[in-house]
Image (cartoon, rainbow, N blue to C red; front, side):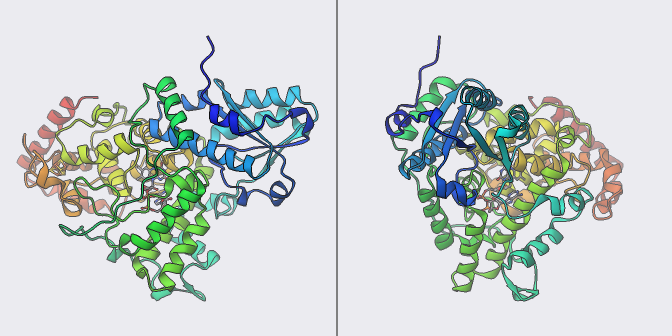
Length: 521
Ligand code: FAD
Ligand code: SF4
């Protein structure tokens, strides 16, 4: 039985094009929704635009429901805007992947030529290149313009371990952001030493605007509930922006209300508050609704106008022209072999709590809650809590990578994989990060108020009610000492462990064995 169509708003508002009348068509993927970075002939000549919703792609992983709602609703809104702007639009839905649909289109319409932009993700790229090779003279691939750095320029250096900090300085010089000639604004390249404050109790945090779903989004939600009801996360209370206009409103709101305090509280975590002063813009940047350049332009302008402090603006611009661009080049340099990376050879499944959010560890429960509800958390919960715990429980990093990929609205393989297999789990053996990201409960206690609300005692190092991060951390250092001793910066941790008494070492080991045996996977 064929499935019910959920495209009534598209069908009503986009006239069906006569495909045989067209000579040039452009295929636009769900994360390429901005014509400003496509070649100018497309804006001028208005060729046929092709959009494909692929159920097979949506089912490749049990993606968070809000992620699918966001991706499909913003693609539908974009197609509607293109049609209103006078483009002929072919909006197609298939149970299959998009390449058979494109092959079909090309075979049935012999005069049609197709242009596509290099997909940011490996598998989509392979699929489209196969279409290209089957219809060689009729398919053109153009380079991906949604990023600022050309991967070819940096790939080899990054593969050889070139650090983000040096890449970032080169990007500052190239883009001119916060530069005085050859010198960085304020004399330093990086003001992170001013960006590690805990949020004082009662400190006001502005709220983020919410967008009520319109009828187009409502139809996507209905489809989600029928076709993808067993997927991860909640679909209720979907409030993300789904058009460029709405996303620009969010950008303005961030620049005006949160950028100034972004820096100092960048690493802070607070019980019941999940966005703090973060931009929440990755979702819009990653499918093209807003562009990295316009975000950085606005941030620099806020600094020049005296509306945001230097350490905040520098920290924010570094995330975009530094980290974001760096991980994308890393992906280009390391794929596809890096998908199998597992430096520590961990093969445990992901603890069950990542799916249910149910756990006595308050920090884990607090960091999982916004993921299950919204498909979002800021960087420090991802790195210093969720990844840290996965490392300490000796979980297969590829399992963690799969979870981050399906659970977050902003996750695409080019960005999630480097962050998980490179940065947070050290699975690549140290190409991206200089040491594994593991820490005891002390870090979480320093940057949050979580421990005050926890059943475990942060002050206890071992034993039943001790904070598990405390003993699991030393257990990790001891068991992975070979990796730490090879690294000058982390060697002292092994020395510290070795100085503990035999009794302390035994207690660390026993508490860890008990915990690791009990953790449900
Ligand atoms: P802000 O804190 O406001 O930062 C501003 C912007 O900088 C972000 O919107 C993002 O575009 C960019 N940025 C910052 N850090 C990074 C980084 N390390 N890599 C790439 N871009 C960065 N980011 C994603 O976009 N998608 C992911 O799937 C993703 N997975 C991650 C998984 C792990 C384990 C870790 C440690 C980080 C991951 N990140 C990912 C990076 C970062 O955590 C998110 O970009 C950020 O939390 C998004 O929230 P925000 O927009 O409020 O960011
Ligand atoms: Fe997390 Fe340990 Fe603090 Fe509990 S005591 S919130 S488990 S760091």
